[in-house]
Amino acid sequence: MSVHLSLQVTAIPAFADNYLWLIHDQRHAAVVDPGDAAPVEAALAQRGLTLDAILLTHHHGDHAGGVAALLAGRSIPVYGPAREAIPGVTEPLSEGDRVALPSLALELAVLDVPGHTAGHIAYVAHRQRWLFCGDTLFAGGCGRLFEGTPAQMTGSLAKLAALPDDTAVYCAHEYTVSNLRFAMAAEPGNAALAARYEREQQRRANAEATVPSILGLEKQTNPFLRYREPSIVAQLWAEGRLDGNDPVAAFAALREWKNSYR
Figure 1: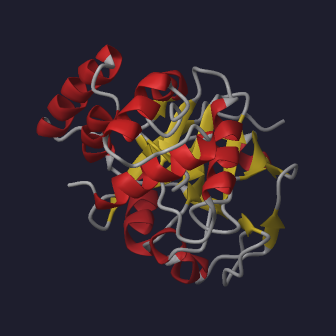
Figure 2: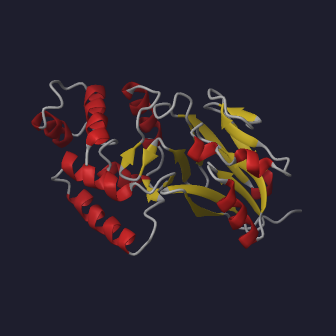
């Protein structure tokens, strides 16, 4: 009988602000959104790990660009969204599918979370309370709507917000401080947000990562999960960005404001 060691998730920094996520048990590994193969290969070699699977959330190059190089000399499955044509994907996935990785004793559930891209998916490890959400939900923010609609994104974020509050949110970018700076403008009276902003600024000053976040904290401080809050709606009105009370319109106005916020 094989013995499975405890799983852990390691951040692999890449590009200017990406995090590639390495799930491993000190022997076997899977990588989430490997936009660049080189830092993944370095992390595998440093830890003596065997790469057994690749997991993709969407088609953007900073998430999928390293797949071909990682497949060189390897015959391993590549999981990815069924509604996006990503070279190298062998296991197309949609909501309701499950990914079983026996070498890691890991099972992941798949959610469709369109908005950032049309076919974006997320992976949920229910047992471990882990969420790998690509560019859908960020610490303090959410992804730009490159291909989807505000209605799609609000639906996607609602799915993620329905997960347990102690779920660790493994998003793909170190955007937290800039996201929270905008959040302070959108909801200036939120004391929990102000305290978080100070904490995260200090962590970055100490060269520490601000992710993973915790979903419960996102519900308290992330304006894109709080767009229905009267205080945020009132701020959108005060900014002249909203003239009604439709929640999706409020979300769209908030996202548009963030797009141009400096």
